Length: 297
Image: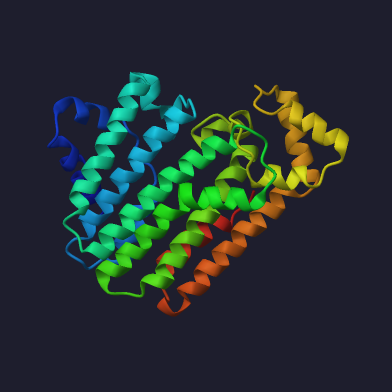
């Protein structure tokens, strides 16, 4: 069914103009996590392919804007669209995909349409919040969680909720599952930025701190260090790190257990997600959570 989603997404874009399609074809497909959730939760519904396609178009639009904001020159191991065609083309393609997604969304029941639309508005607020927080070192854990909920988790939450609404299932438990999946996903992604190499990430390693993003592991690290170490870490903020400096950060992360603590938070969120859908006895949805959080770091 994912193949059908890919075909429908491209069909939606191909009806616009040739150059838009040319740009769209440069985008890497990615994991299609949101589509997978929708297809699994509402598998037998006639409109499930269309709903999954719309949500993935919207997600693709958000990534285009995100890459421009972050000055990213790669996405999932290939050159980003803004690196290939410039920021203006990337922004405009993002706007086109957003608009097309909303246009197609009007064919759905108002509860489903509003669930996705509200999430997209909140996603943009989260992106703006991420930009604002990147202007300074942020030690406030609550602000971090508010930002990643809005920027990442809210669309995954809406995808799961809208699929449940489409299929007449309990939207509350699936929304909670999607929310916690999104939060855990972002925390693990933030951990991987510190410990994984560029080939695994599909983007430069240790990139978040350079971009001004004080992610959860860094927040836990700051709250554990002595003053001398804090001053040293502050001096590395938004800096192109040498290999020695990267190793120093990674060593301190391990020394103070900042990575382990972050992973435990993600695992707790995953367990809550599994508990929410326990009565559904859905091995695929359980597997999505477990494959993300039950791994060697």
